[in-house]
Amino acid sequence: MEIGIVTIFPEIFGAVSGFGMTRRALESGNLAFSVFDVRDYASDRRRTVDDRPYGGGPGMVLTPGPLAECIDAARQKVSGPVVYLTPQGEQFDQGTARELAGLSGLILLCGRYEGVDERIVETRVDREISIGDYVLSGGEFPAMVIVDAVARLLPGVVGNEKSVLEDSFNEGMLDCPHYTRPENFEGLDVPKVLLSGNHEEIRQWRMEQALERTRVRRPDLVRSAGRSETEN
Ligand code: ADE
Image (cartoon, rainbow, N blue to C red; front, side):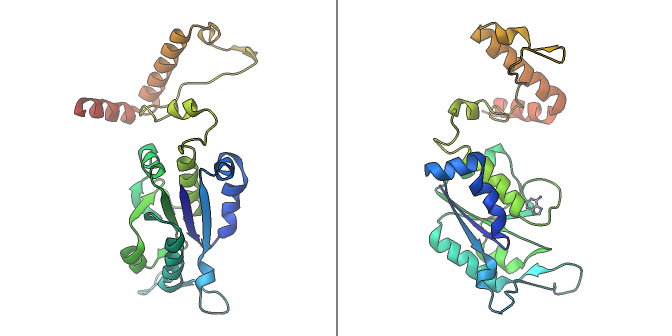
């Protein structure tokens, strides 16, 4: 899968290409990554990419000219929908991550300041996505969230593919608790069943724990899982 990023802060994405699972995804060739700097398409010497909003008010808006050229350059190289990261978008979740991971390409457009000129949304954007009901200063961190969530779903990326299958949210539920050595830590024992070697009992215990956690912490998920079961 190829992901293009349109941003005024290209350096931030060194965090994605330089570390951890996203780095492994790039090195293994399962993921390709291109970052496009909007300032490269500015027409003045100061590389200006923003201006004051028509109608007044605080903040700055990314101007459409350089942004359009930058997105068009990205589209020359990367196929797939242009996704604009904005609090006004549809809410990102594991289902969206799975959907995006099925694409051969994707362009993530990172806004800044008060946003991008609406005509960019009208002419260049296929989809608007929010990572949650809070306002960040730009779309770069949301884009990194999406790259991470999508990259780990690509075939061949996570070392243990089973771990992806057993993730939180894959059954529409939260994850069970996990333990490793030592058996006793500060007086707290690892649950005996996990030492039993009885795989069926362990599976059962984990499922019960996941269900109970979901019921207590996220009853909304239990309700929507129940609904989709009766729908199917
Ligand atoms: N840009 C600023 N805040 C955002 C959010 N919550 N989700 C996606 N993009 C954003």
